[in-house]
Image 1 (tube, protein in one colour):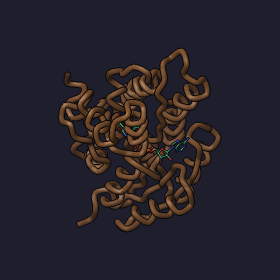
Image 2 (cartoon, rainbow, N blue to C red):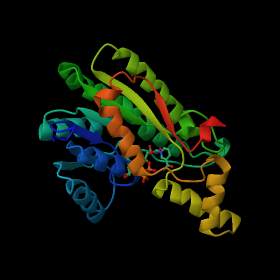
Image 3 (cartoon, rainbow, N blue to C red):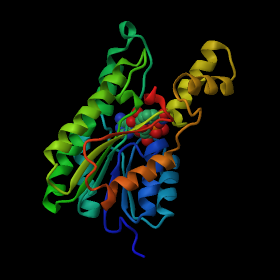
Image 4 (cartoon, helix red, strand yellow):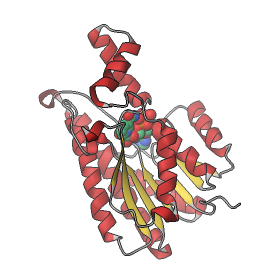
Length: 262
Ligand code: NAD
């Protein structure tokens, strides 16, 4: 059987680690060519490339810094040169910083808005003409439970993720009569390096074990008391790329163990 995403190309930003890598793997399993992006040393980038290409996909890597519009232009041009176009765009690159607003470092605010929000505007505006020409496309924005509700000390992240959900709805309306759909996925806690740092910081701050800090973190927000996995998010991304999801538009789909149901 032909894989469902054969002859499609997926660009996943921030895919050298965590959720982005999990999504790239699931899209690759469906036969999509993959453009990886993100930071890391040469060995970890090669490991990510090898992991994704195991599934038979053609894999290319570009190290654009998603806080820099000129580098994002180079990334899209690279994807087009390698594979012809970007059919599936997954805006996933993101960073976190935790601090009360009055001491929030200005450069961290700017970086979070640039990487977690503005980069999706740049990739979308640059990939859209190719999708419109083909009248097919999937844009999947990895927002967060923090795109729907807030937590203290995360003002930049919450602002960026709420912004990303709003951006998703707006572009979904612009493309509503086309074969291009635009949706957001809103994960709760997923055990990736981004969250491991918050667990480690909490363990150190409260003089408790990392295991206890992990339990407390889940207990505070996520009623299932279980982490969502990158694989589960990847499988949802695959679903959003299928014909069954062709009329799912402008949604912010929570995968948060009940976090935002409370
Ligand atoms: P991660 O730290 O494991 O991965 C982040 C990826 O983004 C890495 O590949 C990193 O190299 C890349 N990246 C960071 N800054 C970049 C930049 N300037 N340019 C290009 N790439 C850059 O984090 P993760 O947990 O996998 O997070 C991925 C996305 O999921 C983020 O947008 C995050 O906000 C979101 N998210 C994560 C969780 C969670 O619990 N982990 C929950 C909700 C949403």
